[in-house]
Length: 171
Image 1 (cartoon, rainbow, N blue to C red):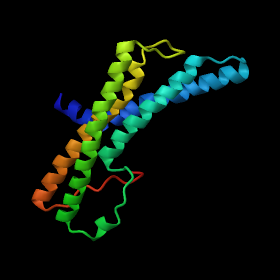
Image 2: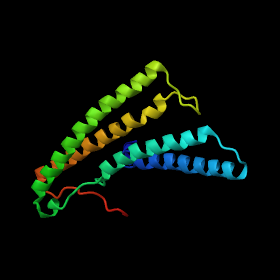
Image 3: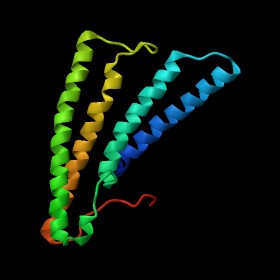
């Protein structure tokens, strides 16, 4: 069980991204085929693609925080000692964590308003809560990954080790 949790912790975003990507591509392919071959299209296909893409974006953002692959200017990092580099990364993670917590709070507000008024999507006729939850889920994952990053950076700072600077693009 411990190994499963470790693998899940390391790869949860990858698996979720794979599921939503397959859903997006397969639905888009089916809809293109239906439109071009059968001269018929559906509104539900467009909605599935749209909401899959939204989930992809938010879960992908969490994966980028986990791998430190998000956009940043790190020219100065190459000239700093390991301890200063750790401090600078921790400062950036603390700022990101504050923004993520604020965004998480306000995104829950939107979900609760949608639930209160019972809004549904036009084509699928499914509660918009399921689609609006992409943002709080994404920011929850981002918050978890930032806390993990802060813990690792603090340990590296304490030990005087090099801090994790991110994964290479194609590892």
